[in-house]
Image 1 (cartoon, rainbow, N blue to C red):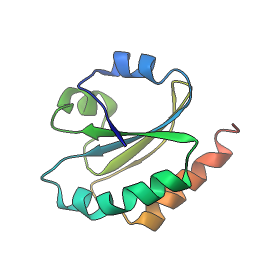
Image 2: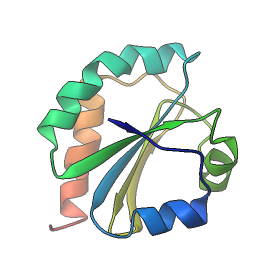
Image 3: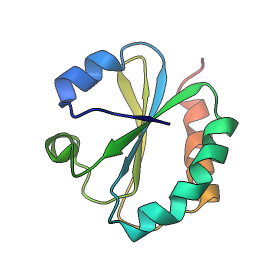
Length: 111
């Protein structure tokens, strides 16, 4: 999983113009983020059509604010520069819940 450098929403949207992306908002101090982190390589492997980007919420606090990310861990999906879904709350997330979220996106985008 690639780390997303510090950015803003305008530059991020340009970066995500082509392809499918899954943003994973997280922070080192977040216990619920640490809970899902070990499952992320398996989730990534299951969904090779998505490029997964790890977004450090503290480093990108302005971006998180612009995007309305109030709780972490959170996931935001993009396809060709358009947000197609988000799994955004402050609750602990299981591998199955993240997979269900990604699976639900298939009806949104046919690619």
